[in-house]
Image 1 (cartoon, helix red, strand yellow):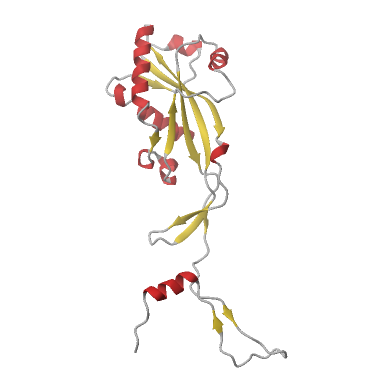
Image 2: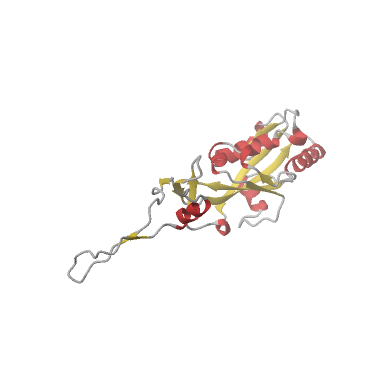
Length: 219
C-alpha cells in the first residue's frame, strides 16, 4: 500500500501547476549528504511518519458481491493509515523554492479526495476514496524541528502532506450459499411417531416478497 501511495503522490506532484516542468520528484531522506549530491531542481516528499487512524477502524464484515449482485465472499473492513510526508522544494535560490512550494500548493489543494479510479493496485481494488490533507494542523508526536534535527539538516520551509489510505488487513473468504428453501417443521406424537398433520414450511422473507411481486398464474 505504501508504494502505491508514493506512486499517487509522485503523479500528482508531476502534474497540475508543475506539469511539463521536468522537475525531479524524490522520496529520499533530505539529509545533508543528499542535499550536497543534488544537482537539479527537485521536490522532495519524505515519508516521516506512518500510523493507524484508529478513528476510522470498523468492526464486522464487508460483503463482496458478484456480477449478479449476490454475496460471493466476505472480508473484514480495511484498516486506515495516515502517511505523513515532509514536502520540500530544492533550488539554488530561496525565492525559487518559495515559488516551487506555491506551485505544489496549487497542485495539491484541489485534490482533497482521490477517487478510486485514480488509484493503482490494491487501493483501486478496494473501491474507496482516499483523503489528502495539505499543510494541516500537525497531530504527530514529533515536531518538524525534531525531524530536521534527526536528519542532520537545516530547517527549511516545508509542507506537511498527509494521505490517509486503506490497507486490506485480512484476505477474503467464501460466503455460504444463499438460502433458497424455508425451515420445515414436523410435529411428532408423544410416542415419537409422525402425526398426520401436513408439514409446515417457513419461507424466507426475500422469497415471500418475490412471490408476491410475481404470483404464479392460475390454471
